Length: 322
Length: 212
Image 1 (cartoon, rainbow over the protein chains, first blue to last red):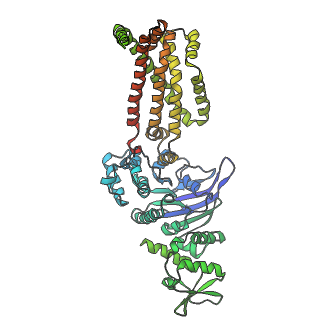
Image 2 (cartoon, one colour):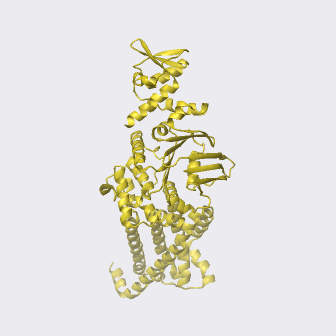
């Protein structure tokens, strides 16, 4: 478990990136830290491997304060994946992947075995890829190697700084799915920084929503949607999802009837059950009414509000994963 | 043409000696130039606030006309090959220093960040990431410095350090064009030869993964 205890970060120019943050990140889970740019999410993550140091407060890994730990040693025990991939272009894939094991002085055969096993796990044939160079690979393949490299030293904790945001949408979706599957096998403590709510909802066990250096809410994806702690979280989930309708997809309202409320006494805007979830969400926004009355063959089959539509959208996302 | 061949044959020994002296002067100057400029480049790439002044000083050296520089040094260091060497080293510094600095500074920040985040020490980052990736630039600097030095080394004759400049100077004094040519031609060949060899090394020095 990673614990932040009253952590404050003030940069030399006086800006406060983090304001008195106390936070527990669960072990062996994937935690997404999300928020608008400049909210301090990356700074928070970089404190775990001491790329940033707190101005005040302390950070504990398994109840041990990291303040006194040797930073090089600490970093070798923590996987790290960055947004711009950062593979070493002059080294083969094998050399890139085996970098941390070599720093840790693993025996050569163990290093080799581990590299092969991990490459296999992300769908890159070791016999084909080990001797290639990063520039010979596509962006998606490169970042797969980036993930493998972070896992090579068998760390308990892996930090990922918007690892998929530089990729094209298709590779991004693929890598998100793969990470999800990978995590089910390896159960690492993964801290995943993102600004993409779709991504967070899709892959995270726990989501930390941040704004202006403060934590607005921490909870499971479902909790965030069901009980957003405040207007900001509600908007952040909502607006993000309206802006990026990807996950709303083209699935129809009628597919999610089980999610809807059966009773509603207030105002409701009628909506055809054949309408896509995305369009329905827009209709709800435009109507200004609190609910949509979902009409299937002339009969009202349920009432759907923002929350229900978001749930439906979340399931659409998960559905695409399966 | 005949006269030129005759000169080559009759002055064979002298030309040979001068040729070897010339190679010696250029080679030693570049070697010492590398020994000074490479570490300096590495240091100013790490402490960047020193980069401007240090490169500035070497750039000022570069602007001193070469003949004048040899002249300046004689009253201080007397005549002989040390004086010539020092002048040549001063000229070799800038290209090597500037390219080393630019090469290291030009290494993609994301690879450095990745290295740091994975727990590489600064020395490991320098040796395993920065220097290999900067090597093609450094080699290009060495190449420029070498060609430059081979040319300027002809002036070593004025401080009594020998080299092919001796032959050219003698030819000029005795209005013997064949002799001038017998000195100038080897200088040109030497410069071209060094350039080709170093170009080849530069190519070899480019990490394989970057040639894709």
